[in-house]
Amino acid sequence: MQLALRDGGGAFAALEHTRPAAYLGSLADTLPALKLVPGKPAKALVTIIQDPLCWAEQDCPPTLHEAADSWTYLTSLTTFNRMKKNKINKHIFKGLCAASDLDVGSSSQPLRPSLQHLHCVAGKQPQRALSYVILDDLRASIVSDRQHLCLHARVRIAAASLTGAGRFMITLPASRKSELLLTPEQYTDNVHLRFGLGLTRRIHDEGCSCNCGKKPADFVFVQEFFDHVMSCHKTRGMKLKRHNLILPILSTFFTEQGYEWDTSSA
Ligand SMILES: [Zn+2]
Image 1 (spheres, rainbow, N blue to C red):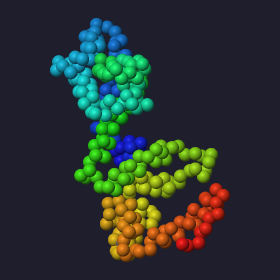
Image 2 (image 1 turned 90 degrees about the horizontal axis):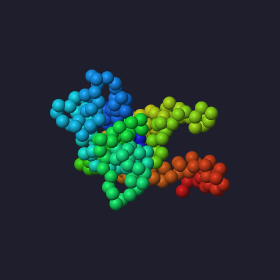
Image 3 (image 1 turned 180 degrees about the vertical axis):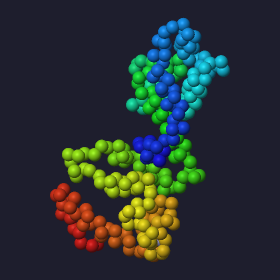
Image 4 (image 1 turned 90 degrees about the vertical axis):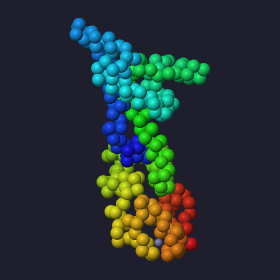
């Protein structure tokens, strides 16, 4: 659920996880204005703000100290450098390097992002780019957790992260084309299917069981129950039955496409 939609999740990342990205990004957005605060009392602070390399020092204000900590944390993640290959966020990486398009394309001169250039990304949605760094790291750690993540979970993540698989979750209703609308029930079913939940509204509630007696609740994922039913020695012939049941369902589609579709049982 915490993974991004494109990674097969529900985009419900814990705010505590993304806090360093939100804080640093927000500070970046306000830096240009902070540097313009007039008057003598503000002068000392403006001097510190203009020198981000001193933010990590103990005598710096806690607000700036925390920004330096957030920067250290974000740049320690292996996913930070991936930002430069992300077509949506690479301009942030470029800004943090204070580089031009030409520099980014050059391999002879490796670019080094620096906290000194934080002001360069003000107003360019740095929160989003920096959050991606954390979410990418989260995804890498979840997917690589082979000890706790069962095969079905890994397969589900792979399927749910395919291009467009989660698009229904962020698409606005198409009111002019009623055939494209999802009813609340259909939407709920889609969410259940995406996350491997019970889908109890439909067929596999507690009244549903395999011929051997196993129920959906005996498995971690609903898909595991389906897989079991299709291969259980007590349900021989299920594959053929499924084949025969699906023939008339596909018939309309293939007939419309111009095919002759034989719906007689195999
Ligand atoms: Zn069985």
